[in-house]
Length: 410
Image 1 (cartoon, rainbow, N blue to C red):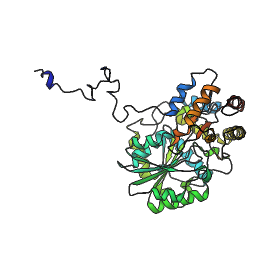
Image 2 (image 1 turned 180 degrees about the vertical axis):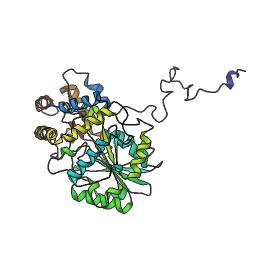
Image 3 (image 1 turned 135 degrees about the vertical axis):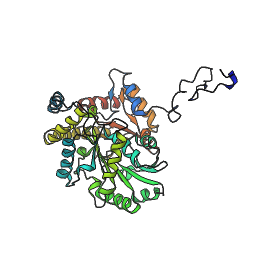
């Protein structure tokens, strides 16, 4: 029997919700967790770039280089030879062994095969790690400025992000005193990113030792988002996992995206204690099951050829960073610390007297150069812009020539 109209249950998901003009709310079918949430400045930048055909984008950290042709050919040959199926749920055994051999060779850090999982990018690895170790309401400290997705990734795993500000006058190093002051009985982990996106800082041995001591004393996990080890310009990258007492409490997230210019292959890995790796593997079986087989083969060939592939990439980006930094320093009302790592410049524009979002908007409207305002990287980041050096020196020169003609910077 059909219920009377007054007794008809409302559709699930708030189907009866309407907007002010009486039309059905277009967001009514969207989870309340996401309803009305704005797009991130990163994704918005992609849409903006199409507004000006001559625009030069410093927005996204996607290297403009194409993956090494030999790697592409070898991966294609492997696909034709039958590598088109699911791999082992932990990842292609050859690739896993090659990654661990790399850590042994590069950092004298040896781990068993049970400590490694291949992931569908490091971003995916971050979600798997957080989902595997956080209880609802656990706090995760992230040093600010931070990679824009971190707070969202933590909330996806029902955690609580806690920002730890770093400062230019301290060369963007983590302060051990401020770090320890944020620790509560709900603190579960610290996310560590060095070389750092967006500041270009590399944490010193002194900073890493202090963080390690605090993590051990408070029994915290460290999630080391080691995405840019190739781009450590002053001295070799030092993974915190190699410090005393840290192997048993560190989750290393690695990626082939930047160090091997393989962003589109979406391949990364996690190194962690075996119980965490096993849990991440189990969670992953309910998401994508395994990383793409052909991408894993490409990563294997890239690793095997790294001594040939990587030096020219590093030299190219070091040249770009040096040139762009010099142009920033020569531009009125702009400044920046000399970058020690990564592929980003973190530019101080406080002398303009304008909010960073307005500065970025004016640079785009007047010079057709796309940047990301500092507020995308944390609440304490007003007054800065991030510039990704993913264009040639020639295009970079053109971008800064345009900026120099703006009244704001002339």
